[in-house]
Length: 274
Image (cartoon, helix red, strand yellow):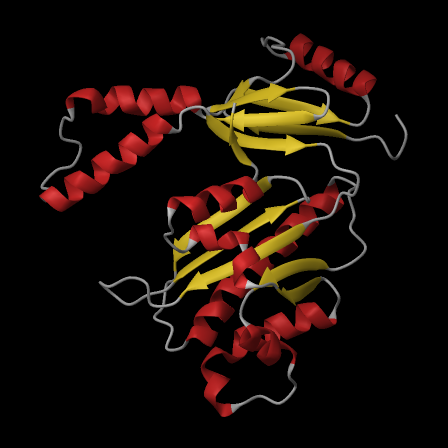
């Protein structure tokens, strides 16, 4: 085994995945493990933690069809039985709509295609004061290797942002933290990326403030995030890049759209039917 060879082991409870750059070393590792522990080699991964995996020479397709069927069966969607305690008619209607959506997209998943240039890129977006109950904003981001999306996030922000700039900074900070974590994982897997990781944002003020050495008084309430984003960009680890709203694929994690717009964004994320 040379210094460049790598065997990666992922363990979850009593389930294990093994991969690497040297098939002989992978085989040797599995044989040693089976001598030490009672275990079965199931071959090429086809199902793991509720995710179905279909592999071909140039593509990998993942979906959760089996898991979704179990959810629909559990709540008996055909008979529209109650699934919420003390729910209003509005809650019930929303819940049933989600289940109907799952039923209509059982065969959908994410297709990863073989690419020529392996490059990590991220997209960050925000919807300011979207929640009518507490006026909090929603952050969203996703990452790709120029193929399908493999890491994504959509979450209501923990504080109330008093401006769109602050909300965008919170979203961008979350995306940059994820980018740094992914970079560390890539380094551990010998997949070093020399150039800074591009994170695309659709807010010009966010770029201007993060790169402007003059710290304006109106932005002091998010001073820590300002210095963090400026520091990682100065170090060359991450680079915030402007991306038009029309092309911002992270938009799907923070907003609601017409079906045509959703279908376009899903396609860009690599979401498709089998």
